[in-house]
Amino acid sequence: MNRLAIAVVAITALSGAAYANQPMAAGASTVKMEDCGAAMKAMIPLPTKFRELMTAVSGGLNMHAAWLGSSKDPGAKAEAKALKKLAMDHAAVAKEMTVIVADFEAIGKVGLAAHDTAKMDPKWGETMMKQVKLEKEMAALMLKHAEDTEKMMQPPAKAPEHAAR
Image 1 (cartoon, rainbow, N blue to C red):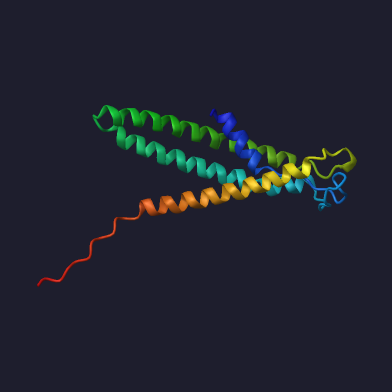
Image 2 (cartoon, rainbow, N blue to C red; image 1 turned 90 degrees about the vertical axis):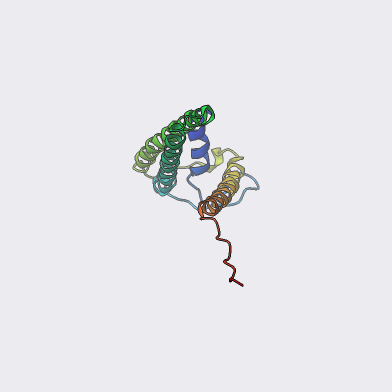
């Protein structure tokens, strides 16, 4: 997947929208009105933290590549090369997050505009609920991965010492 696609997927999961206090469409629920600028500013921590994560992953991949790259084994050299590519891809996504944060900051200065809820796409609510579902799934995946990584990084348990007989 190219880095633009990764950034789009990430930001789709991270981005929000303004809400209106009138029904979205026939049969849709009523949602709270927010200043779009404030809603966009509230999104800034998500791509900011994602940038930090992608930077950390890139750093770890580069370190692993350097470790393997010092080997004379051709397989280790090939893996090191692949890891360096992954590290560069993650660094590029981190850079894209910097652009997205700047875009959120810019739109945050726009302020409140009139929202004609009669013209809102009737599927907007479904789209937002899909986003909520994906955010929760992503959070669960990230927690599981973090727990698995913590377990992997634990030193091996020592065998119990037996008393001499």
